[in-house]
Length: 169
Image (cartoon, rainbow, N blue to C red; front, side, top):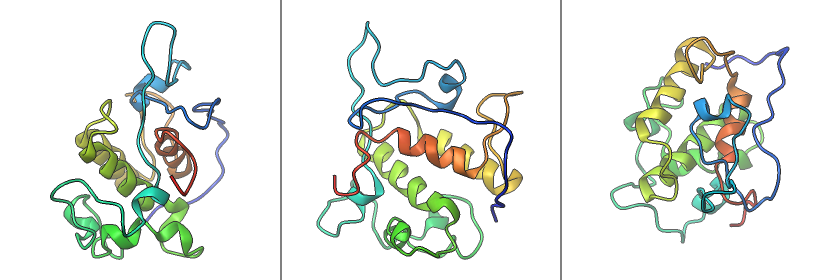
């Protein structure tokens, strides 16, 4: 469903501490000023990685079950549609899954972060728009007329919203 390929553009989303998160929507990244902290505001905590959410002892936000099919949250075709959120969030461990770039894995983690309130700068509709544009057009435009992001760039953005890059946090 998502094609891979080279792109002539290089996008740096964030650099700095592994404990900081990018706390802007993708459109905020277009200015080149995406960062977790600026001099006038408090630190954004950001969300948790798939490594956090995949652990069976971690409670998920109220009403979200590990057995929920991905297709119940995000419009999708097979094999995404019937794969459960719990299975998909662990796909990064499989090495050769259908989940190219571990994209679904990171969409599940971000969905849980939004639902759990650890990511407040993004809404579920924003996340669904990202998914749908990738699904339909194989790219995502952060703002109208902007250079589109490929699947790898979207995944990198989602990863940049985590407060820590550790798979064990």
